Image (cartoon, rainbow, N blue to C red; front, side):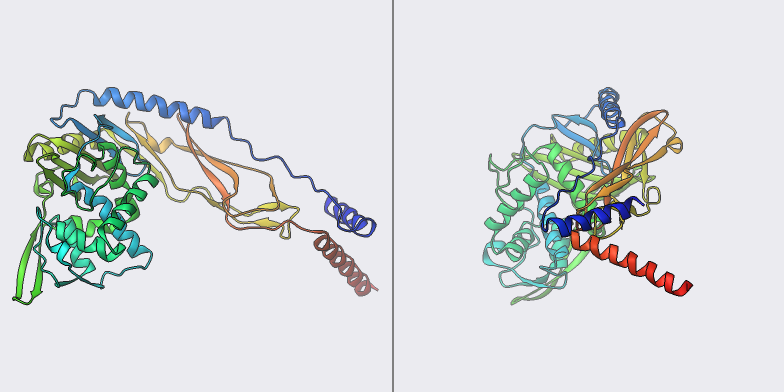
Length: 425
């Protein structure tokens, strides 16, 4: 009945004052009070985490232990001190390579020609010759497994046209990830420039981006040894790649999945180690460890602590969502979706099976509606405390109805009733 009255009013306005009319919008969705409780719970968890990890002893002056799903930092030491990352730089290089693959700009089977400049790289290398042709996938293996500086530059030139342009893209990508303590000078970390710096926290951030967005990186970072074939003017020969991440072969009660080592005289010994156990994925970033072995020992210490303390809750699907009513639109309803998946990391041994979910939605949304517009929240409660929420959003768009749309609806109702009356007679 209300809708018919609204339509009749619209018609009156159409014929009385063409082009005139003001339509009131419903109030916007209010943030639930539980959001404040969630923030307080997160702050309390951070304090508790710091206390638990305080007893850990590691030799490196800078380190971070992060859970990959939530991004929560479990342990930190000198996390924001700027230091040289050496070849851990290549984590960002790999992000840009996989970005280009995902965007279809390059393909794994593309053939890349090694330039004289790429060949000239010293340090860790796979001894590419000028003019040598290798596929993108082979060069990825050379970067991930053997930390090839020459392979890194060859790929930088292939993706961006030059290393300098690639480095500009690296810094832009780092800024987009919130890596405030990072500035890259080259694509491989070979330069001992005081301007080429990052932090243990930023290494964890970019490592998280790589493994979350491109989990296929583990197809390469878990390879222990593999051969590639050099085809040059001197002939054809096999070259063995051996993984620089010796954590892969150490005795662990977790599964090592990567990721990248690095060392120079300035940087000392660095490592971004990724591992998983019982559905939990952790990242341990180590900077400036005093020797070759201690960076791996430090990573083991952090990962063992993390896996013993962490319990992860992940809601893959959420509660079922139906369409939401739309007022004042050319369509009567809009489909809903979740903005993201919810994850919660517990460090206190809580029973995560007691997690409760509550769907809090608006009664309707006023048009116009744009995709991604907030329509409510799915709230998560554990032991009586709200620990977080995920936004429920509009999955499509709905335009605002005009006078002609209402007139069309009115005429439809009239003709429908006329037809029904004729049929009855």
